[in-house]
Image 1 (cartoon, rainbow over the protein chains, first blue to last red):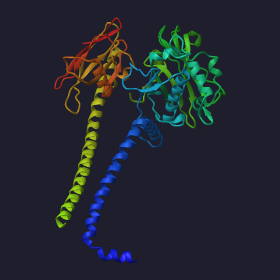
Image 2 (image 1 turned 90 degrees about the horizontal axis):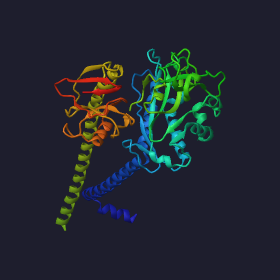
Image 3 (image 1 turned 30 degrees about the vertical axis):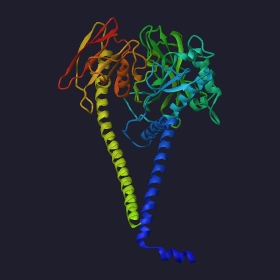
Image 4 (image 1 turned 90 degrees about the vertical axis):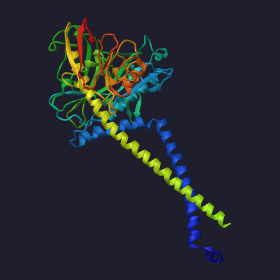
Length: 319
Length: 173
């Protein structure tokens, strides 16, 4: 009480403001320094953690959802991600790519499985119709990422003749978990049973030193072209065919796109046995709760005949 | 003692004012940077769209003309001028063989429209590929003839090019 009285005696408004001003200014400086330092630290972590890349994926995902939820003419905000899978950290063929350093073949499969799953998530996991009732075009593709397999990978154990087996990649998808209760295969295809494809042939190989598109697609609601037509080129040119509309398929699988060199000349008579080294180019699944069908993310050499054989009429993502 | 107090007080005021000024300057710089980016982003978008039309999307785009050419055929094409926000003209480049290429070329031969980093006199594939990768439009032309192409899309002039296909190789002059 005494102290308070003494304090009251010594208090004058001018002294108060003088003190307050001096204190405020020191406080401000300290606050500013703390704020600027915190901002710099946050920025540092943002860049270090690569959250920018995640936000690009989020931006794409949001634009896909927006396109489906309201009648919107706004274009999708999806950009191709450039990825380099390397053993020694070198990557000569791409400019400033996202580098994924691997030590084993399994780590290559992990990287590819994650790229495929991310792509599927970005474009709505087969639950979102994001192309509208377009009558002019039917197969819309999106190139989620362009992946370069660096030359240094050829020294990895398990890689022979500079080739990575896509069959083993699909095996990896069936055996490894994407989330707690789902394997990658269950997430993408709704099943772990890929035996139906093994009977038909191989998924082919990835050649080291080349660039591959991680591409997925959607059909327009009006026509499900991937299941209703053959596209055949001239003799010797890569062609596309479809095996099975699988009746009572496991999961949501509808069919698979078969690609290979063609010795037949007409689409109507083309059969799998007419194709030279036929391979499964992609798997088609039925959309969940919508009429559209989807081509699940698949890896095909960039701009190759096999990629063209997927019959993408328009690429929705930006390069 | 009185003098000391007065001097001290002035000093504190000065610190406060300086701090305010510094904050104001930082905010103004940030605002100008933000607005300039917004404006330049829009201009860049326009330039990219024009380049995309010219190279890929329009009916008479370079890519579509190349795709429609038959063996032994040639065709003239008039290209409109493309310039960026600073008024710099963009050029039509080719990247072939084992040279450095922009990412969207996917390691294949390609044509790109982008700003010329070095001027017409010298050509550095690495720098030019970097520039086209950062800010430009590219189209893959797998059977493009292995020759250096650097055509300025001139201001106030229409640039005429001749596209021909011989022995399944596409040549542009």
